[in-house]
Image (cartoon, rainbow, N blue to C red; front, side, top):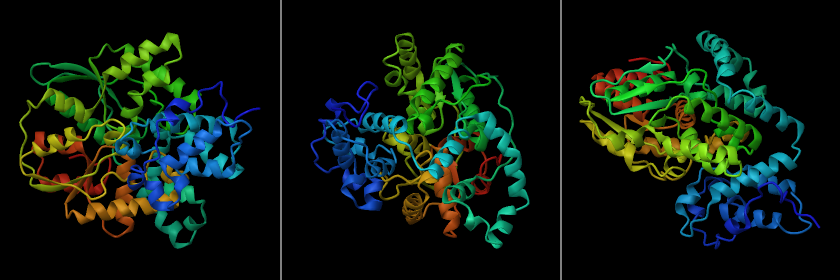
Length: 444
């Protein structure tokens, strides 16, 4: 007798499955349950399917695959669960099983191959920048839309085209930036794949703020992907290979902390110790790196401010990135940093726990439910009446900004560290808002 899961290769652990008492506290916070209104599209429903996968003679049915695929991996259920169910570990183990044991339809395989052979590779993304900038500069999208070609593309490609941020100039970051004044720490910066390629101004602002707050900043050259997208998709061998290369990269820097400004990447770095727990030659090294990983807001909050802040009279809607708030538990720190800026009024969107629909590659693989969730989040942000939306993840930025534009309600969007940078440098609030409206790559 055999089970659906490969019991020799890290299936979802029965002990963790048994932690779920099926109370239903996860239901109001689950975005896929909100969209599909199906029990098996909730965390507790999927946990039932995980348990079934351990039963003798069970099989992975197409319906099971659909329900697991519909999960955004946002971890809102982890925050809501009173029993401490580690759904994050369960769903990643399950997706690794699906990746190994399920043959998907040909069209879906091609889309996935395209996504995962592009986005985790910074050099390949940088090659894409030139053609994409030209495409945007001549407004080819308007012509393609007018003649109806965009509508003929597969839904995933339509989503990719619409989500592409407006690209601007990229200045190469120095490998080492000295601290301003007394040095308090030496930190390394993870530049990220999407962040480094499409949001270079966020990285530049991160370096400036860290230096202003007394940090020497080291940017290791030729650093690769952290493996977040691969890990969250169940592409385990690929994710572990990326993790090992990044561990080697930062081991050579001898920094006090590794700073991350993309929530999904930060969550993944902090999970290295778990991912590499069964590899004796890597387990301690992974644990050491995880212990050094800090979100930019987390580190700045720990250090406390030394650089003066100028006034920014602006109302801000702060949108929690799921992998910052739910996966890392970093909620109060960015809010404290923003409230400490004179003139800022912070406003909270309703349903803050519900994912915006970006979720790594979810909005590319499942564009229709992602679109519904994007509109739900955009309406929540608009309801605050804020002048500026602030978030901490490039996926959230693209998802909500694109949705607002599609709704005819364009709104400035910025990363937390960009607002801090503007306050420290004394950038006029109107200039900051104009840059945030123009999109990534705009320098103020």
